[in-house]
Image (cartoon, rainbow, N blue to C red; front, top):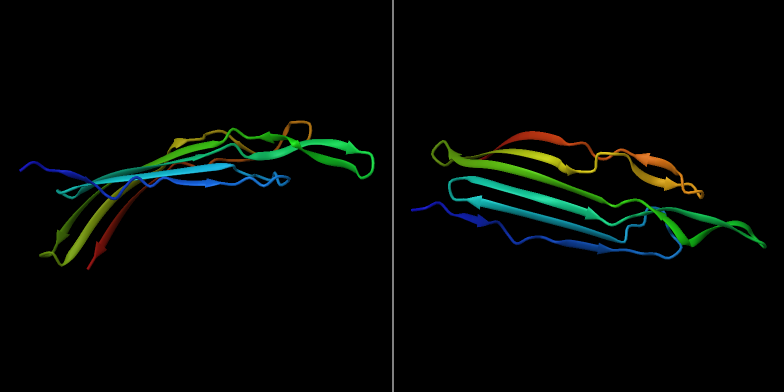
Length: 148
């Protein structure tokens, strides 16, 4: 009988929408997250996840108001480029000790695809980036799990 791989649950799209007029500190309008996994009857499984985030406001131009002085012009914000990243994993599981122990080994690669350069966090009123953060690093880890 041929081995079959089954979808483990549906695709999980998660969407968030947020926009607050007047508050531009790292406001992200949209986020999407997609996760998928497949499990084969011989014990193998593989999966992946994708994350996308819309551009975030990092600051805005300033204008001079004659009565109160310098204020941010919320109609002219600066934005970053948004973010995109993805993970992958593969695993194998099998029973041990006459089915008394369930063993699983799994290899995960976090941020397999994604941003590599600095990510703007704050922008000066003249448009120059003032603060950056480094993207999350790629991490690879191997885990063994025993359930009994």
